[in-house]
Image 1 (cartoon, helix red, strand yellow):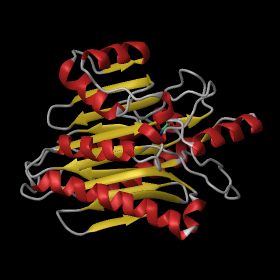
Image 2 (cartoon, protein in one colour; image 1 turned 90 degrees about the vertical axis):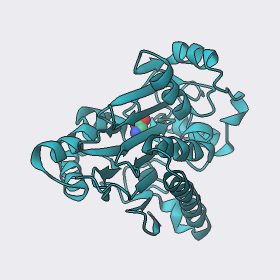
Image 3 (cartoon, helix red, strand yellow; image 1 turned 135 degrees about the vertical axis):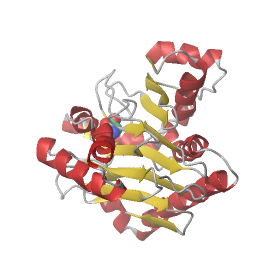
Image 4 (cartoon, protein in one colour; image 1 turned 45 degrees about the vertical axis):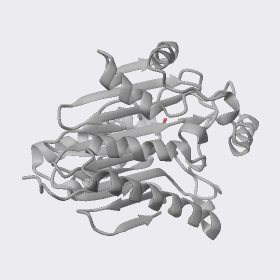
Length: 313
Ligand code: GLY
């Protein structure tokens, strides 16, 4: 039974080695941003907002912060362009909206929400998604909005190496700045509803047209009131191959697990089957929070059952 009358919320801002957080000023910037965003989520939920509203609001703020690889902090692809993916899902009725390969949209998560509420479809991609955005008067931003000096330097580094790298890449621990960037939020509201949102710029120097796990229901995002809400961050191909978010949900549905044990089982499966790189946040139908990652760190935080705000790497 859901614990109606309490609320929980979790957010993440990417996983990886994150050696840049050894610099205490960078660490403080990340943690302060997450704390501020979680407190905003708390306000939405305590004022009676839905889990869906809370995850959309938190994901929007994460997209607006250039620290994170989503929205204005998105990484650049092989063509030097931003192509973003996002999805949102409502655990109450399994309704969902997703966009993939979109450019110029300030907040792809809001566009995904519009696909859910104002179209007959679940996912729109590329030019079609942009036309839909224009029809809904979803704001676009000029190219300069997305081109932070850090992202341009990252692309140049990837091109020089002749490789495709993840945001703050490096699978070896020698790397300065290994991070699999994505942002996400999951929430449990006062009515016992669950929702999840995930948004990303993907991988630095990725192929034009490459889509990751973030907009794929069951891979990088999933929510079902009967089980849990899940948002993943990591190397998208690993999460698609393992249908990762739905796998965690299935552990709860079919094996009676809770957020903690299902997350543990999901991470074990990810590692064992595909040596998956990344992490996940999960809130279950009782509002219990859990997180797990195969990388050295994951930037994340939570408020469980209306308690104190916790942020950590
Ligand atoms: N998890 C984000 C991506 O692979 O695109």
